Structures are given as structure tokens and as C-alpha cells.
Length: 99
Image 1 (cartoon, rainbow, N blue to C red):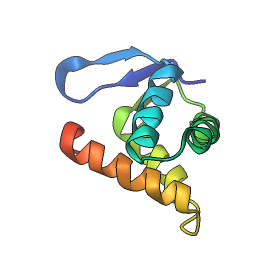
Image 2 (cartoon, rainbow, N blue to C red; image 1 turned 120 degrees about the horizontal axis):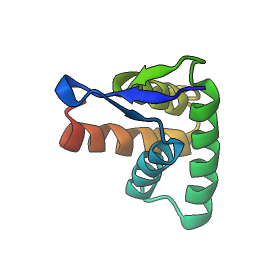
Image 3 (tube, rainbow, N blue to C red; image 1 turned 180 degrees about the horizontal axis):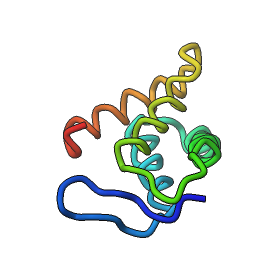
Image 4 (spheres, rainbow, N blue to C red; image 1 turned 30 degrees about the horizontal axis):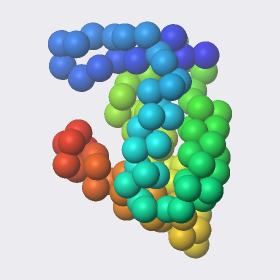
């Protein structure tokens, strides 16, 4: 299991908190404008996929976590919900995280 997240620059590492990934996914889902029931389902499904796909290492970078989220969202291009969330995710990353 991942124990720490390596941050860019001189910020070093911080403890891995799975809830932070969920909050990021929630922000993207809420930004996609999905109805509440679809949003809750998408949050649970995407969060589970990302957490399940984390490598079994002691450390992971924030860049790698973001890549795993994008991969999960991009996994089914025929899924309108995922594509809507992917668009909201990349827009948020572009505006706030310089992804």
C-alpha cells in the first residue's frame, strides 16, 4: 500500500490520504453538471477504480495519481458520464493545477 505522496518541488513527501483523491474526483464530477444520482454513482465508481489501480509501492507522485485518474476516466470513451467528468477534470486541472 502507498504510504506517502511525493510533491513537486521542495515540498517533499506527505502521508497518503485516499480521501484527497475522492475530493478531487468529487470536484470534477460536480463540475460536470451531472444529476445528483449519477454524480454519486460516478464518484464511488471512479474513486474505487483509482484506489484499486494504485501501485503497491511505498511512495507515489502526485503526477502519477493524476495520470491514474485520467486513465480511469478515459477507459471507456463511449461512456458519456465519464467523458463529461473527464472534460470537467481536465478543465479544472488546466485552470488550477497547471496540469
